[in-house]
View 1: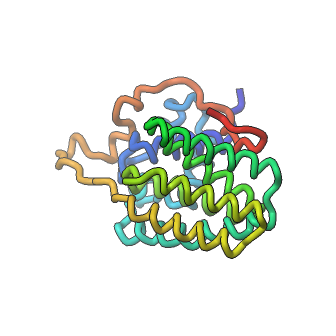
View 2: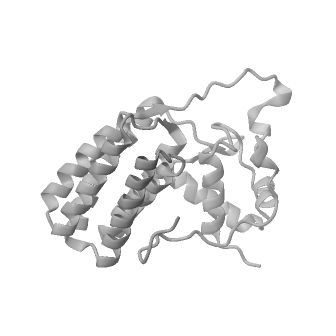
Length: 249
C-alpha cells in the first residue's frame, strides 16, 4: 500500500510534538521507515517538509535531528499567533459560510455546557477545534496554513494551564462568533485579540532538561523513546479535515 509523504509527515510531527522524539534526538530514515511501516522515500520527503516548518534540523555528521528552539523563538511564536488570530477572525467576518457558523456555535454551546457541568476533560480539544474552524472560516489558505503550523509548534513548546475561569474563556469565544455572524470585522478582530492575549498568559514553557548521558547512550543514537516508541504498523493514510457540516464529539 502506498502511503503518501504528507501522512508520514503528520505522524512524525505528532510524535515530535508529543515528546516521543526528544529535542536534539537523531531521526534516521531507516528507523523511521521501520517505525511507520513505509519505505524511506516518503520519510525523506517528510523530513524535508518538517525541516522547512522548523521541527527538524540537518546537522553535519549527524543528519536529521529534532530541532531545539530557544526561549526567544518560543516567545516569538506566541506573539505571531496574537497577531494572526485576530486577522483570521476579521477575515472570517466577511468570508464565513453558514456551515462554519453552525460548527462554531455548536462548539461554543458544547464548551459552555461542559463548563456548567464541571466536565473539563475535553475542553481543550473543543477549544482547538474552535480555533481550527475559525481559521478555516477566514477563507485564506495561506493564513490557515500558518495558523495550523503555529498551533503545532506552540503545543510542542508549551504546556497550557487550565483557565481560572473557563466560563469567561467560552464567553469570549461566543462573542467572537457573534461578531463573525454579524459581519463585524473590527469587533471580531478586537475580541479575538483579547482572547489570544488571555490565552498566551496561560502558556508555560515545557522543561527540556535532560540527565547527562555517557557516550554509549548518546541522544543522537536513540531516536525512539517512551511508551509510544513501541508503536508498530503502518502510518494512517490521511488526516481528518475540520468538519464544517456538524460537530464531532
